[in-house]
Image 1 (cartoon, one colour):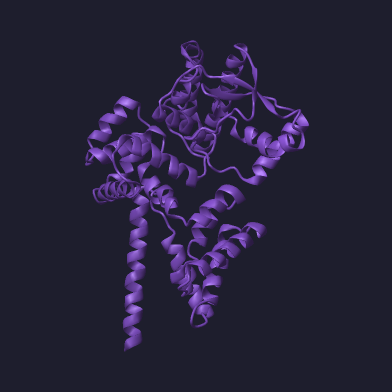
Image 2 (cartoon, rainbow, N blue to C red):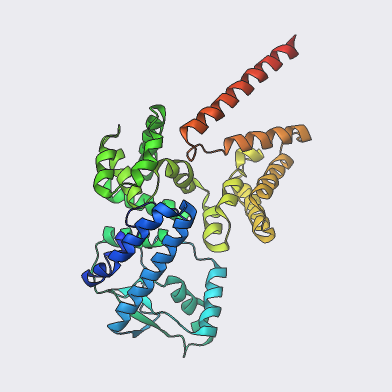
Length: 387
């Protein structure tokens, strides 16, 4: 679940309702503000999600009052700017079962031109599973239309905002945020990643990372003022503005989201189609030519595919996947790895995977003091061993 701290958790989505609806949700805004003061972040995130679902239901109801129509599934077009690319076969099959047993309870939402705004999983279930087996019943779907033309950037931004609130995995989130950044800065993907990384590192050196959490919770005008006061060049500023528009901490995106863009293509495909967990993909990407000591990339891809299938089939946990990958790499090592070597490997992996972005400055200082103390202890031990 993506955590949100915005003063208006549904501000992008509300733009699609029309002016009549905005007055009806003022009380909702006040309620959310009250909940901010009374509930923990985890509880607030769940409440925000429920509020979003309620808004979506309200939107369907309002549009339905203007008329539900039957639309041929062959006429419906997938939104090319849909941020959500992960539709596993299990998800589609589950939706098909629900539609078959309960019928279509809610109409899909279409933009002009029969472009999907909401309901892609239902459309896929009907197209891929239900229509081939029962074409008479499932050649059409109930639909309502948003009577609003949107530019490419507006469409992508609004659907991204809605998708994040309804849950978006880190891989889809990374690609969608990168697309949104490209709308506002004339940079390549690698240049966006580099600009963000440099800005975060500079803020970290100057002790400015803690400010980002505070800035994200500010109203838009105050947020912009505070961002412009940071040591950012124009491109960095625009990237930060985009990320914070979607309630994403730039430091967290740098450490945990944009790195997913570098996953091997076979692992990306496994996430989107086969249900591979992102944490498992992080571990499986270590199954590389370098780590296996192999020169043939085709052989490496085959080994990684088998490992991926094993992880999915046995539903391995994060720790189990990491251990499985470590053992696999050890088996391809020129010399068999001893238990002591494996212990060292696991220890190093644990340290490498630690992210400091979510810690307060006082916690970071305590961690650093501990590392320094252990480093001195290790140096002293090595010195004594030599003598």
